[in-house]
Each structure stands twice: as structure tokens, then as C-alpha cells.
Length: 64
Length: 314
Image (cartoon, rainbow over all chains, first blue to last red; front, side, top):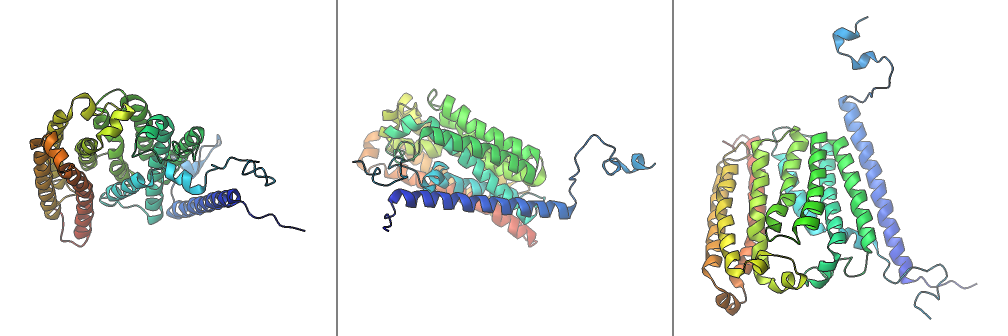
């Protein structure tokens, strides 16, 4: 059994794949960190979902 | 037998791009200036951001600037190929195909605008979207090849980052943000016209209507002086606002005095004098213009640091 020598193109593809992989991993980590920061601070996260959501109303209107 | 056919599974051309070639599409040197000015705009704002939000904001502003750089390389590949200064860029050098540059530019534009909006606020995202549109469409596609005032109007694209940084923190535009914008906007023409004076063959060969080509070199020297004089009240005015202080004012006065002297020396010279010393004055003015902008923004940052220590500001 013989091994084919690695072509220069393979090295270039590897560099591209590695770079893209690390970039995507960093992006995921950044989005996660941003989410943690915003949730911990209590930024409004609840969207309008066509159902009654007392938490989205001003205090006086939310009273039954 | 071709170079690649001996290897099973290797079917791409020998010019298949590496990761670094895509990074070069984003004009990393321009991005570094964008990062610095946007960071100053963000840090001198009266409202603070969480460090993660601030980091994200700067990252996505830089990514947006990079995206507009990629779009510019896609559109300008033909003139980049004939200019010495730009011939080694990835598209004219054959490392990346023009269509790929377009795809990278569009994808990163969308990602950067959406992510900036989510990380900070919608106004900052809208300003970033407008900046990308302005650089790619208004400057690259429209003005650059049609008017000698191309860099005067197009310079606005490079002037937006500190304003976007400020808006990321405050959510609104104020006089300080406008003056930081105006500082870069007014600085751009003399900076590029000085470059055009000693890189004359490049723009002429490419057919780009730089002022040096359309109105002559004497007129360009007059324009450099006029714009440098117009820059003075903007720079000194910025130092008198809430982001300024005694330090900023002293730096602004010193830098502008030096810049005006340089512009005056350029204005006094003719082509024979410039050829005789190989454009030494023009080259020195160009190099100083880079330092001028850097020191102005560094002064804003230093003033903010002094203010937080209770000794800076007005």
C-alpha cells in the first residue's frame, strides 16, 4: 500500500477549512456570550406571539 | 499532463484561494483604521456598553467595512489590474474570482448589519448598512469613474465608523458624532490628493478621473490647501465639544498648524520642483496625514481617560 504525497492544493484547502471552522466557532461563542449578557441584564426578549401576554403590557393594564 | 491531474480528487485550478486570500479581500489595513476610529467613537460616548457588546459592535463594524472592501474589489477588478498600487489584490492577481468577491461581500454585509443591530441598536445597524451602500454603490460604482470629486463625496464612507461607534453606545447622533465624522470627511481629500500627486501614472493609466488628471496638478495643489484650511475649524471645533478638553485642543492646534504648513508648501511648489526632489514634500505630507488622523483620535481617547480620572475635559 502506498500513500499519495500531499499536494500543495490540499494544504491550501486545509488552511481554508481550518480558518472557516475557527471563524464559525468564534461566531457561535460570540453569539452565546451576547445572549448571556442580554438575558442576565433583563433586556426584553419576549416577542409578540398572537396570544395574551401580560408581561408585555404596562403594569396598570396587566392588572385583572 | 497537467500539474493537478496526477492527484486523484484534485480537480481545482492551481490558483485555488487559501483563507488568507479571502482575508485580503476585506482590506485589512483599511479595517484597522475603521476599528480604531469606531472604538474611539464608542469609548468617548457618555454611555457605556458591556464589554461583550462593545467588542461585538467593533467586530461587526469592521466586518461591514471589510464587506464593502470586497464589493469594491469585485466592481473595480478591471482598474485594480492596471494600477501598480492595486495590481496584487486577490481578484486582479487571479487568486480569487470576481464572483466570489461579490458573494463574500454580500454575505458579510448582511451578517454584519443584522448582528450589529442585534448586539447594539437598529440605528447603528442602519448607519452601517448605509455606509456599505455608500462605499460600494455611490462611491465605487457611480462617483469613482465619473467625477473628479469622487473622493470628496466618497470619503464619507470612511468617515462613518466613529459615528457608528458613538451611536452603538448612545442610540442617537449628536454634534460630537457629527464632528468626528466631519474630521475624517474633510481630511480625506488632501490625504488622497497628495497621494495622487506622486502616484500620477496609476490613476492616469486606469482612467480614473482624479483631480490631478482632470484639472491639472496646479489645481490639485490649490485644492489641497483649501481643504486643509477648511479642516482646521472642524478639528478645533471637535476639541471644544464634550469629547474634547485642554489636551485635545492643544493637540488639534499643533497638528493643524503643522498640516497647514505642509499644505502651504505643496501649494507653493510646481512640478519642476517636485520632480527635482522626487515629490519629497508631497510624500512627507501624505505620511503626516496618517499621523494627523491617528493622533487626533488618540487625543479624544486620552481626554476620555483623563476625564474618567477627574482631570480632563472642559
